[in-house]
Image (cartoon, rainbow, N blue to C red):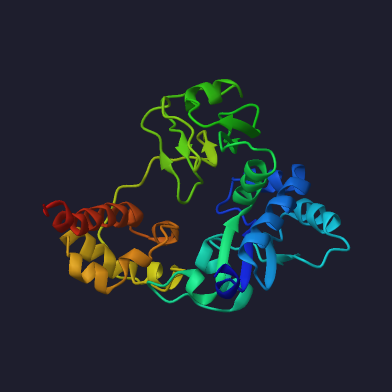
Length: 296
């Protein structure tokens, strides 16, 4: 069935945000393992074409893969423009193919399967080396970290322990972020563990971080709508989220929001739009679950 459904296999080598370099290092340092993992995925999915998409600001990763694939014709590398958030699934597919994924549809319905380079590497280790997923590459950066870089971290490792290994200069004035500067969030406690989705830790100083500006009233300037890569109307969704209007939020496709943070970044009123959207999504999920939990 897979060979009839999957026409294009995309390996996502575009880092999802600035500061994050874990996938870049993985492509440079474990090129052969990565390619082997991609070939396993190709064997399972039977796609007509395999593309490894890498942003053009990663020349060393591009060169490493092109050199390793020299003489091969089962997959090829495609350099894409470095423009946030091109690493997001639907946006990357649009860049590569020109196709726009309709709201509510999955990429497989259009014959496209996408996997991250980390997934392809983990597939190789699981199938060839018989190793479960117990560790991942994590980017440790920010000017409060003296020894910045990428490290292999075991899942479950306390973040505090990981930061101590790279000479983290703790300062209560500055938080530590899990994730990138756009989609990441402040860690309430450094005792939290590393999980399989923890790709980056940022410990900024005063040059990289400023306390959030006071939220002001929306002036309906449409800057957020102009910047939204998904084509949503964030200013309208903001009002619906505040009013807890579930039906209107659904009508205006809040679920299609990829939480990239661009709308909040350009907002002249410093409205933390993504925080409102995340809270509304959580409430909507709880509402959808209520009828099921009430049965039997």
